[in-house]
Amino acid sequence: MNLYHTSVEARERSLAQLSGLPLQLAIAETTSVESTALGVTKAKGLEALCAHVGCSLDECIAVGDANNDLEVMRAAGLAIAIVREDLITDEVLPGTPTMLRYKTYSESGSLFNTPPTYGIYMCGKVFKWLKAQGGLSAMKVKNEEKAAILYNFLDQSQMFKGTVVRKDRSIMNVPFVTGDKDLDAKFIAEAKAAGFVNLKGHRTVGGMRASLYNAMPKAGVEDLVEFMAEFEKKNR
Image (tube, rainbow, N blue to C red):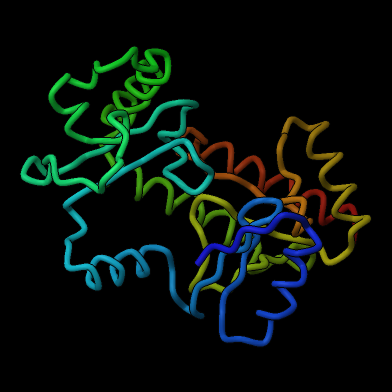
């Protein structure tokens, strides 16, 4: 469930009211709050939603340029929809604009209007690169290996600690802290000077966050862990 507010103050009031309930809460944008039942992921929620409305997960896949969509395909102005052909009909809600009908694009070869050519070109480059790496299955293995390198270090470190319980850990974004805000700031500054950029955590959470996206090589994660180990040794 997403709750949208008109101000940060209103968001904080909602957080206070929801804090006692068995929910996982996250600030999705500056003034919005996402809530799910404890232990429930978005994937499980999608499965439950599909079961409730009587459709299967393969009927329609839509990816846009919002923060919560598939980041690897995120390009401004670009939206991708994969829809079963038998679902592309004229049966739409009354008042649905022409530009929001799947049939409009299906019948025109996605050229009903001028498409976002640069976004399409860049996504094509990414897709070809992914295929050259062995495809999605191979990338999954590579990303799990990269994440394991960093998590294994965090689990044995006496200074750095991961902030997410093991069963809910992401292999893409790894948040961690030292437990001391000043030490966090020192680490971020020295890491940047050493060439490790964008490690500062989300503004609502603080600490650090390492993003292990597909294009991040395994060697980059190993170098980061080596730097973290050296930083820990010097700042005990």
